[in-house]
View 1 (cartoon, rainbow, N blue to C red):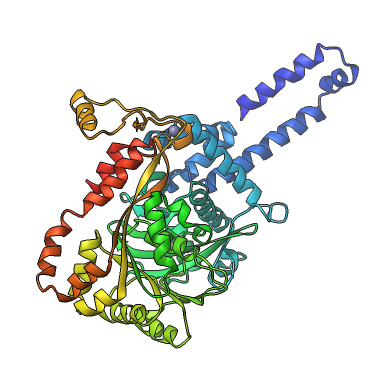
View 2: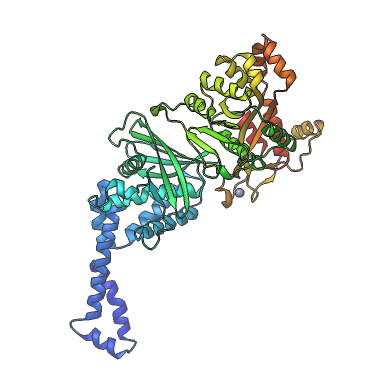
Length: 532
Ligand SMILES: [Zn+2]
């Protein structure tokens, strides 16, 4: 502190030489009010900063007392140094530049400062609410919790706001080692490290997320699940949370439910003109099942919403059964399944059939009973849209037959099998013409494929250095026409035949993918990564 006072003396004595009489007189006094005010100001600043240091997540808990003392003597310099070191460490962990990280951190600090004055920034601050609408502050009992808890609540909200800003589909929080947790975000299907947090701080973040998601905070081992909402101004997003015990602590997976799905149309899916016409024709039919297949995270639900948005819901009675309801569809009845209350897909479907529906939407076919009811509904004058976890159309048919569905029912109910995958779109700011080997060029020429618009990924500030921004679907459609229906219903050897075909059915996806690559929408590498 002595050093700081001598530092302050310098400007005051230099002021004395500028000749301003009042200041000169003040500086000459044995008791100097200006110098005293500056000294008191500096002491208060140091005490305030020492307190900020104590609650800062940048300082490990065991060094906090030492960091306090250092801050008392150095003022803002220790905090500034820690801030820069933290930004440098984060920039090393991800592909972002140091200045990009620094900029984001500054924004986060400013957001946290704003969040402390809720009345001024009510609209722009993000609020976490449980499913009944209570805020995180109310649930955690802000009043007796003290300052440290308020900081944790802010950090929790900043983490969620950050994920929404970066359009993440999942937030994964897991222990890295005994003292650190990593928070990763899945953006466009790829995981990236968002930040690393000290385990004490992160455990508090996990606790507040579990509290708002309606989960038992004291249970750290057994898997649990829950959900919560985030509100910012008029925007509301919903989240699904799953927790489980892990080595060095507890892991949390948070799914950001697709809030834009209700506004998504078939034109956005990325179909070819032929595919588009085919799907539209099938949606216009009064009865039959359209089955959407793909592995987890292949965009099946979004495509189902896109198809539902093509249907005039004023003239056709649309009822959906979902787990969970991912987006609100105006003029449709949506039912969420709840196994604890014995509302299963099958039970919900049976009740739906008594409500005179025209179009029924089945979130996912998982068991024989659901498959059977859905196919019978499709056979008896209802349009049924359903998703099934299967690699391709052939395995989807095998899966349904393996569930115990009779070939006759399958052939009568099923109209279209729609298989899809998601591939990343090239970033248009930085893509560059692809460098192809001579043999590759020859191969394309033999197949009469124009390679003029083949690009490769580079990476720039618009796409977080990944070379990709956003995603699009590649699809393969299998129309179950009358000839095929007859084959399914009568041929005993069909199952064996499908098992052989199943291995080759990626060809349709690959073909559509290649079309998108030569149109400059995605890359050959991306198609290879997704469909092999
Ligand atoms: Zn880019």
